[in-house]
Length: 216
Image (tube, rainbow, N blue to C red):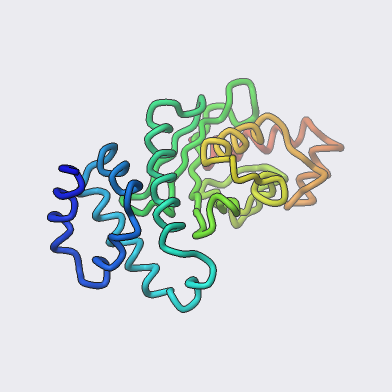
């Protein structure tokens, strides 16, 4: 109870439109308060709830207050887990206090054409997460038939193979696994897929050139 009272007092400075959301937080907010900085939780809620209020006409029918609280709690827990148990060669963290936009860093695996490269991505989490998958955007150019020049990624778990039990950690592991081999059957860049199938030596040469040009 002491934690709840302290939280309520601290939130006394929140704008009036945010105070009405406090009753729906309950045990979820207590959990957030125990695990994370109170100031950080307040900043996250102020920012995200503010955005959600501005979009309420479009989103009210899709998602309720309890759902929003659960998403925030889940993403905070995912961030905490990744700080201690990130997949090898992967790093991901929210941009500032925006839990719905993450920056990911992938190291090119040793022994592959992407070895020595550092690849940056944005991971956009939707308001329906984890029911729907996040969207990944490669910021670093990469020579890969499943990733186009706009940074779009063709990966089954980001589409029909996604399950709500998956997480951002799952996405990181899948993205890095793409660097071991391409999937020419689901190509976003047909010319690279054709080269990968018919002239692997030339594909490897170009992929290494791009890695050193854009990712080193």
